[in-house]
Image (cartoon, rainbow, N blue to C red; front, side, top):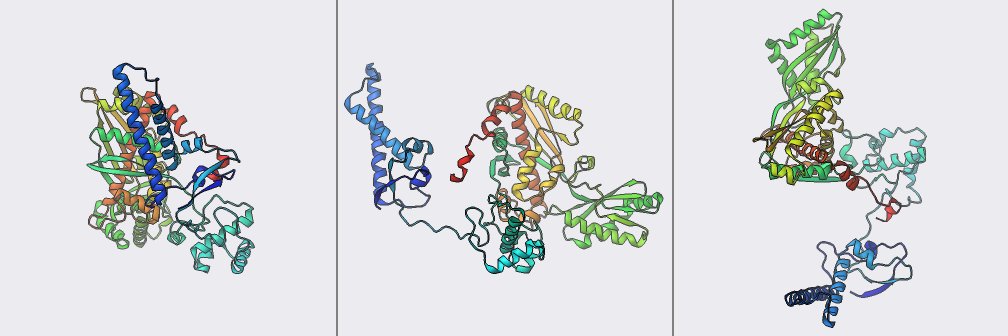
Length: 554
């Protein structure tokens, strides 16, 4: 490979003006020789200087008194260090050795192979960069008809038979209607067919979220690495610190003490007494087997667990609870409940079903019924953190943690009138894992209900911490879990898809992972607040100092 001298363009960054060593790429022979020479120079210079300095220390000679050979050795050490660091892409060193002057010249290594062609861009609208001069004539006509209202946007996938093309046309029509470019919203690189009819309608792009990983979370004897999708600085780092404290104390344990999804239709009757008759029928244990058989006609995995009713005048709210296997189960239980309602209408023809959901379920809303009765998976996770770990890793002490938890999480939440919010920030961890693994983010509302308990044990030396979460609503099949990125995160946890040997065990394991990660997050945040480190950490990690004016060059 030839080494050529090029004049650097004014806006060229070190990452663009210098060949990078990519994983698996073979270096050309001259570069390998150059690297070996500078590596040998670095090692020889360092060895010589260390030997000379040791001799000076033994003979009480001042270290700053140097001879000609030592000067040459120091120069060789500095030169080889700058070359090696600069070659392997250390930004700080590159910024030192690279001048911003337009007239400077630099040695640039010509690429070993011709650069790979850029991936083909969208024919309709690129995610970034200049738009194509002209769209295909056929697409132009469709865009014009969408803008004019002659073709509904929602029929494009069906009409075109191409989900990617439909998204591009819809996006271009949106651009023309609103006058907004939305260039920062990516369009290419997503499988739009995978969401058709089940995840998102009328797509025009997708939102990118960074995914961090914490761990290992030592939970029930397993070493688990937990993916978290978030844009909040400190969250992943803090949860990871909690995982470290748990692991160094022997790990955490969990138990799923209840597992059942709920759906509560509401029916209106001519009178309250008539509504009470159906309530008595539904809650009579003698009728449960019949109701269970009717419910199971629509599902292989759903099994009715019980029915509890509530009256409000002549309106009857019927809360059905059932197991749902590895699915979160809302669709499954809704179908089963509809079968039961159809059956009940034979004996109660005056029943007027107002809605399949009467909010007594209660889905995606903060409700005492979920806090008391549970919904989805009810989990307790606990650990004993040793005193030395509290001091070394968490930088505080047991007594301070116990006192803060009582005053903040218990008394403070009671003063606020909290409902299921007796914790520091359970919702942070729940939402991050939900987004990463394809759960319904809106169910964070009830899934984040949590009470955090801290006690001094073993003579007051160690800390017992637990989180009790009565309504974690998760699944490993269906919905967003089947998308590529979310499926990969589930696979990382070892809970991807349905467990055919033990239906429901994957979803239960995911629920325990959520609770275990919440335990780690609670432990770390409470410790940071007890030690007074919260503000400092957020100022360090959650306040960007980047100059976004040159973000396009990054």
